[in-house]
Image 1 (cartoon, rainbow, N blue to C red):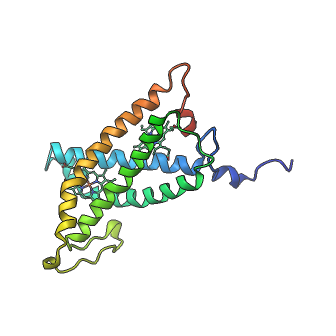
Image 2 (cartoon, rainbow, N blue to C red):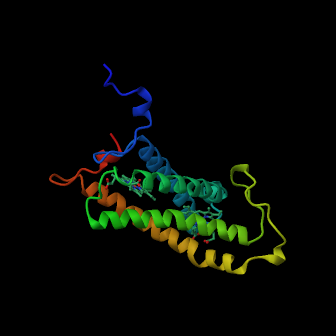
Image 3 (cartoon, helix red, strand yellow):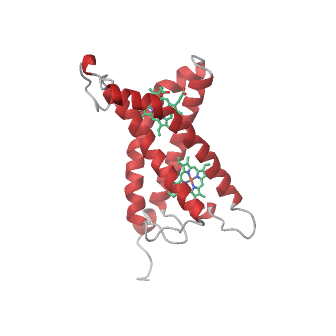
Length: 186
Ligand code: HEM
Ligand code: HEM
């Protein structure tokens, strides 16, 4: 009787070597939905500028990207806290791939926000007054240039990596392999 875990223990379960817990799963799938949205906005903007889809999605790009930045910081902190007990990567490639996903998940929105700040224009993601803006003559050229140079390029690189990541997860469903999907869902 006393061995039964308290209900809240399963609701906010930590990771174990056999599976990701609820916090890791919630972060993974909520962010996957956010990335699906933001990549849809980037693809519509790059391929069908001013179409109905672009007009619908593009105005949300910076806001969804800012939320993803906040979630990526939380997720990185949580991953560090859980590092000793979460499922081990199935290979060196998997560990390197996950590391690269983290690096890009943090760098891309950070560079986007830095460019936004450097432009001197006010910015209030989801109405939250994050950047009050300043005199445009004081514009930080280096931050704007860095964004122009890297933000979109790294964004497309992340999209390619995500496609590889999904393919790898499905590839591991074959008989005889480690069925990694079960660690993150089900
Ligand atoms: C993880 C989050 C993000 C991803 C994956 C992402 C991805 C991308 C991609 C792939 C493009 C290229 C679109 C094109 O070629 O037309 C782009 C453009 C852009 N993004 Fe983001 N973005 C993110 C977050 C942000 C944030 C937080 C901001 C600003 C607050 C931002 C501002 C912009 C702007 C202004 C552009 C158009 C200029 C350019 O192509 O560099 N993005 N983004
Ligand atoms: C349909 C989409 C996706 C599927 C099916 C999927 C599947 C998985 C699976 C099965 C794992 C566990 C791997 C293991 O135990 O070795 C995992 C982990 C991971 N995935 Fe995904 N994933 C998806 C989308 C994404 C996206 C969009 C990102 C980031 C941009 C991402 C980033 C990660 C990271 C960093 C990990 C390592 C665990 C963590 O810290 O959360 N995934 N994914």
